Image (cartoon, rainbow, N blue to C red; front, side, top):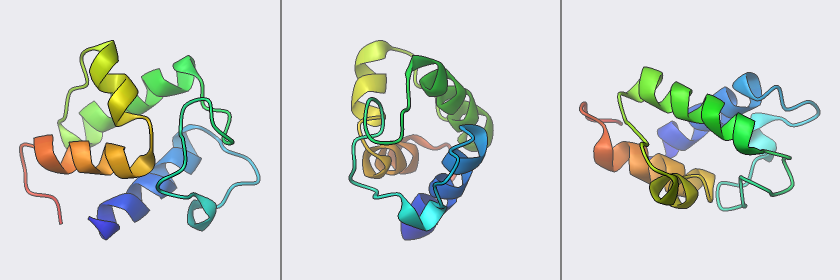
Length: 88
């Protein structure tokens, strides 16, 4: 799971263009949406697309999305539990 978290940190910095944020600076338990990283609903859509494309995991309703994107740890756990292929 730690490898997945580290991979997600890199992808988030890249796809969300988080300036002045390094992957190692991201706290996996910190609030993602509405937190210190300035992630908003448009960013969430970009993350949903990345999760579906890169991991084959769908996030198809708002209630699931709110839980999944509450923290990086929750996102990694959701991907790990719902991925069609085992994730190391």
